[in-house]
Length: 392
Ligand SMILES: NC(=O)c1ccc[n+]([C@@H]2O[C@H](COP(=O)([O-])OP(=O)(O)OC[C@H]3O[C@@H](n4cnc5c(N)ncnc54)[C@H](O)[C@@H]3O)[C@@H](O)[C@H]2O)c1
Image 1: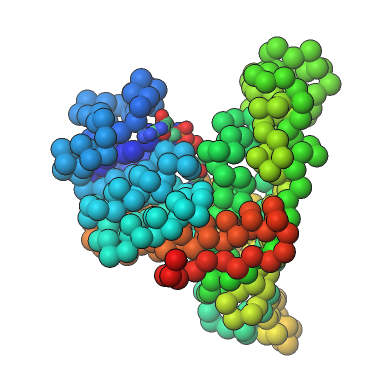
Image 2: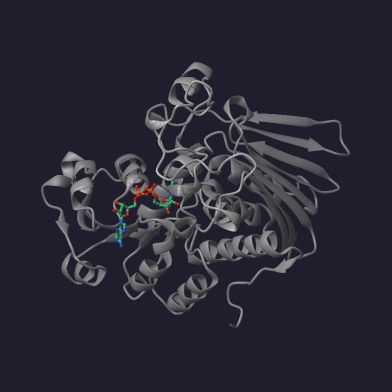
């Protein structure tokens, strides 16, 4: 039996445990939990975990009392760095949700905590380990584009309403959508290009669509505009436009935040890589239905490799030979096959058969890039990206 402890047994980590983790290791059991909302967690737990699980008051008490083989951290974003820092003192493999930190102070403290630590970490970056992204990297490594000079990446998020109608709209918890969303994309872009982002200039447009002056606490069930509002459950159902189809918090309420404490409707970043090559990335949160797109195009003198996770397709073009190829991936898997790959990595680390492909350094380097993007969007101009291992 694999004995798993969980800090923050919320929706995402429950989904990973009940789905991908158990597909890889049917003998996995949740035996210890630290979470202040015990009642909600007990509702969520699978039958096989309900009998033996023990709730602990603190991480320290759990680590000393529960004889764990592995720990997973599924709290909200603002708590990841502090919890992971505490767990770095133990040698128990850690599955850590992203973003690994939401401020520079948190990220630097986390980096210091892992300096010399023997705690192996799998950061929850499904895109980097997804089969389509790995295939693209393999072609690039094999010379499909020659020297990679440029990357262009997009994320048209068709489920973006969640960042205004759910608790994810709380900026003090998420740190904004570069950290919440682009942390995945900056990570896989660094993987594809085989190097770190060193400089960023970014822009964010906010308050043009979501956010607004509707009263605090407003829900559709109390609103007299549901006939005309495209976000009401009845109009979403009628239009097939996605999002929560039951009563939900208003996306145009003062609760969404103001000024720079409001999630952006869309944002973009100009990225410089360590060798001087560059790229652009855009994320758009009001896209709906078939507008969903996420992927990248990497090019060099010899060719172009591009892929899109929604289309589940990769294209290769040889610039100087009359051949082009399109490859289609089969299947319809969670996070495009990335979640099962992450689970395989994590349980491989736990059982000593694998190394992490998303160690703590990848989480930190991505956070440093996101923080530079957030600073640039707020202040204008290029911002240097702190590099993991740099002196404070
Ligand atoms: N990797 C991915 O692709 C991916 C996808 C979705 C969400 N996420 C991340 O997962 C994280 C959790 O999101 P969620 O939607 O599951 O949230 P959630 O609110 O459902 O879960 C958070 C849990 O943490 C618990 N908690 C709160 N304070 C705590 C504390 N001090 N100590 C221990 N537990 C505490 C809550 O009671 C809750 O059970 C977020 O950071 C989000 O960014 C990642």
